[in-house]
Length: 288
Image (tube, rainbow, N blue to C red):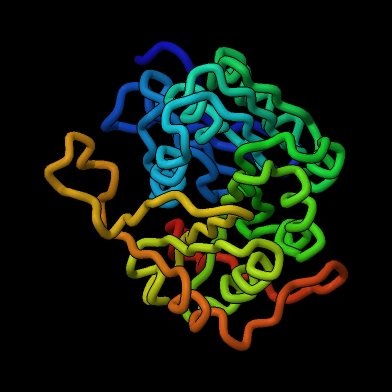
């Protein structure tokens, strides 16, 4: 029997959370909410990123200049704080703010997943939009939007108005990363890309190839910047690299003219609209 976190179910404000230990990694833990995996953390190795999209985000973060130096980061959505832990480890001295609206979920992460041991991390109980709006101009190098309710992204975190708030908070060479889940026609992702492209001149889309082609429901990462994008191409990942588990499957990217064709005809999202937001099919998480 392992020491540390206790596997099981826990009541939270948004329903029920479950902690499940990883049989393959002694200190690996999956945090699920409502049956949907929200975070994976390895308490012994915060640089281990298990979910595909977090690996993509981690690669982008690694390529932010200057590499390995401390940054100021804002996270909209917390759960077990996988990426804040990653940033704190790979870029020591970083100052990070996390906005998580579910106080009981934060309490669970503190009590069971050693959240309070992450250096430089300030977790605030607030919804992401309210929290971001309260931040001062030009104070963040990185803003990560990774918040979900009932397996769907809140539309208010994908609109033009919210994206302009992100741009206000970012420094002139800052970067936004957005986790979008989608499948099949990728209609919602096209709208998110169209929205972000109205605000930022440099935009890139990253995903595993099967997701990017619409053959499988999954997560895609939108990267955007007012200045330039990190020179990251997951398709170039060298399988002989010391960190060869960083990508289990070759990923792809779209930018420039390719991304323009991808979003062609998509209408940007605005506050007050309620377009359908994709949710994963039941079989994705073994619920069929």
